[in-house]
Amino acid sequence: MSGPLQGLKVIEFGGIGPGPFCAMMLADMGADVIRLDRKADKGRDRGDPAFLASGRRGVLHRGRRSVAVDLKSPPDRDKVLAMLDSADALIEGYRPGVMERLGLGPDVLLARNPRLVYGRMTGWGQEGPLAQAAGHDINYIALSGALATIGRKVGGPIAPAAMIGDLGGGGMMLAFGIMCAVFEARNSGHGQVVDAAVLDGAALLTAIVCELRAVGHWKDERESNLLDGGSHFYDTYECADGQWISLGALEPQFYALLLQKLAITDPEFQRQRDPSAWPSLKAKLAAIFSSQPSAHWCALLENTDVCFGPVLSTGEAARHPHNVARDTFFESQGVVQPSPAPRFSRTPATRPVPAPYIGEHDDQLL
Image (tube, rainbow, N blue to C red):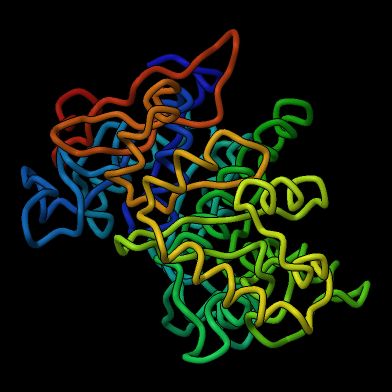
């Protein structure tokens, strides 16, 4: 592996969701990430039906090595402690207090390795009334205020496939926090605990909504605002073939081009920023877009300043000419998956190696 994080050693305590995503991001950028899996599962391919989307075909587990350990076994725990003595950071996603009961809490590990960055990933955070409660992505983003903004006015909020909570608010924030703490530790010589909660990160992602509300441009009713599908010029539309397209013609010049491209002369469309006109204008645009298949609208509007894009599945996205030209996706073990991001001019990341079998690197690392 190469990349800007080459030389960084991270120990990942096996978990699901945001922790593995954080580890994937670090491994994608060249960090040496060693995942600690359960010894009871040694030798198994995560592609086995007993596991969720893993194994050689597992996207979230790509790019690192795996050892199988029993954290309740003193000999195995000693081996883990030895690995942590030379690590820059660790990632753990247990409920608060579990690592302490295993004898692997921050006080123990920082006493042995003062420069260690101790990354903790939970849903609710290390403390607070809900800290010990079970939860999932949908619950955390509900409490953060993010979920209430997603969906149509009629029908209720729509869960966004764990992307805003587990991955964006959780794993990505933990990766950012770990690298902040590693940077500081290299100056100070002292590590610290990074308390990353999906709830906190999802709340941070609502910053733009908080700003819009502060200046009087956000109503707490879905599909009533500029950026939540309320406006006719910032929404998705179904085409004659059942496919969907997206519009984002926010700025006046982009909106004017949209009207020109669609040959719209109806004077009502001049009321772009009048929310009372949006329902009527949206119905008119819906009628226009439903009259032709998506290919027609792509040929007319794509690669223009209308701010347009077809709504694609991940499989379709991988075949789009722009994504092909940029290698935005790649295929490994028969699985289409996103390439590492962002990109670096001098220390580019290489294509990640496939996910390991559980315990595949025991002989090498233990």
